[in-house]
Image (spheres, rainbow over the protein chains, first blue to last red):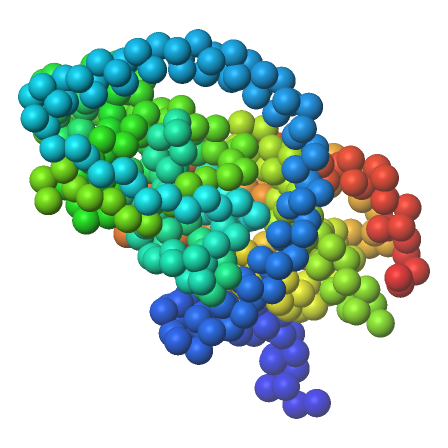
Length: 266
Length: 161
């Protein structure tokens, strides 16, 4: 073995590492490549069918806790329901009186959450509905408790959604009370930041935040969460505002996807 | 044969990671059981083999999870490469040694992963280190020590598996 070969052997580990790193970087930079997309689609379809079966068993681990929660929810909702019925009647009467145009209901598709990928800044869910269920990219995912996220990738039988606690998620939102507009974005695994709100705006802790409707993706008025902290900043032009959604994203089992909606103004 | 066993166990760990691990999440933090498995392997194998195993496992994780392709393969290659530096002769690992290895490697892995994933965004490095990387590393280390307690005799058997 000559000295050149000896040197190569001595640094074998470093060459292996370099090769692995280069190949990984190549993959990172070609994430939009069609062939890679096809491989990924196949893998997601495969794991989707496995996860659909495993999810059936793993959900039993939460049954007792869920049962307790549902009994409590049931009582709360029964009380709320009676109040809502009275409010609905009043609402119908007032709408007719003022001549408001009836806002169309959303068209919703129910989906089961069969997989989850979360790591603080990345929060995605795998759903058991896809192209065959008329699901398209960017459709909003909701629950009665508020906005969950949006669809970002659709396969034939499965789709992937970005939760609002995902780093890549953005939504135009407003404070319900004062109509101050901003952009909701990721802050941590439990809360969102409400950005682009100028200092000294009429925003305070306890205010409710809803979608503003300034995009083609989300209808106006979907509840996002409650402001837990709102402070002016010294160095910046914008406030530091934190919003906490009510939804427990760790316990998502079923969600609704808005497949069609009519804007109030359209 | 040894590598086939590694691969079979890896797929079991992957399925647990993708489906069941949420059950033991604490405030959204879950232990990285794939990394635990790879660290155990890297403490047994040569540095070059560990790096390749880390790369392959990361690549499969990228494919079967919903994350960016290439990201886990990169972070897992580096993690396994560094882990191999902590190897000891005759696989004589004390609890303290394992605690340090698992904690450091998990923090390094998480920091590289987050840094690349959040490139081009307004990264809150210190905050995510404190509220994500450190709790995750502590949780991962605890789970790794429990697994070491259960499977230690098989893991550190000086004969090949």
